[in-house]
Image (cartoon, rainbow, N blue to C red; front, side):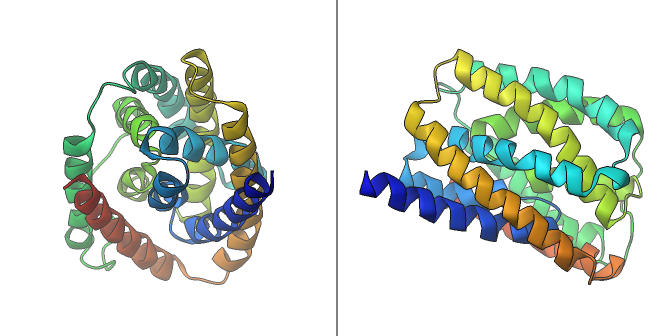
Length: 245
């Protein structure tokens, strides 16, 4: 029992810290948690736990950034994202994701050159319908690996979304994508009572992190936000490649 409480308190702190940073870096809080969860619960349960904790925290982020959400992206992205989460949960136990992580990692690292170290506001043209295949792909990979938040950032930046709109839009679409993920995990028997408790602790901590992150977000400029976003994408890409290799 003491071990359960200790791990729960640790997860609350991890959730608070990672999602405070996640608000400032345009997402990726779940990705930052993966190495820690691999140690605490093992690689097989890390992805379901991370996605469960993130899902529990998302209503807070949606409420905090509600008036900034860009709904056209949401309606293109979410239906295909739900399909992607079910497909990934079906293949969860048998599909190897190393090569996927390497490709995604290389793409994220390349953003520092695409945006010329944050000097450019956009690097390639994008249209709303592109978010349909993106929803399928990002959800599929994120359900398998436990987090792919940063990969969507270049596409939202190139659509012209500013810092609050980017965070709010990702939060809204991630919440509904998470409904598909959690339903899929339950249907395939991947969530135990212990994992639900751990996920609740992680999610409550992440909810507090969302609130703290929003307070800090208002203090930075759009250019500084873009630079932080790109720096985090590059770091995430390097870590993905390292973990895969």
